[in-house]
Image (cartoon, rainbow, N blue to C red; front, side):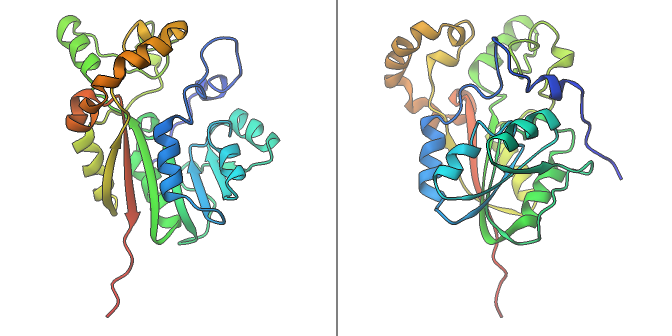
Length: 255
């Protein structure tokens, strides 16, 4: 049986520093909209790849949700536990310690691009969900226009996992799998999920190279982006920086 790898950098990845941190840029309007639409108080929710719990764990507790986080990083889980969250390690075979068909919902945000065998993670989520339970999955869009242009003009493929590695040492970057809308849907359906709809992060100039570092210019960039936000809905493969798939575990057919 093959197992997931656990690179040493996933421990240092979650150590808090004064520089870039992986829990930045979360709880954005798109995530909040999806949470408000699909998650209700008293639900039991799995967060597969929960990280340090500061991304979504505290938000879920505030919503009255029974939150259960899972990750491979002991450093991240220690921080999550200190926040009062119920968390546990993901097994070496990508499994989670959770009863079959007992979760109402699951989230898996910005995780599948890190995994050698993402289908194993999806199988663990599928197993844990109740029939009819939903999962919200997000991945960066590898076909985003800046990725295309950079590769076309320079021949360099930017994995985009971290500003600390993506260009300096891409062979050490955290992103090892890459998705566009069609491929994401194909993978999810192959793992037994029923695809409900694709939701996209609007096009925004602030995610472009150089611009994403200009925090002082972000209000201006956001304002300039408003007339172009529709591009992500019209042509998600080209203009959506980030993809959200809402899927569900099919209910059994009654005779």
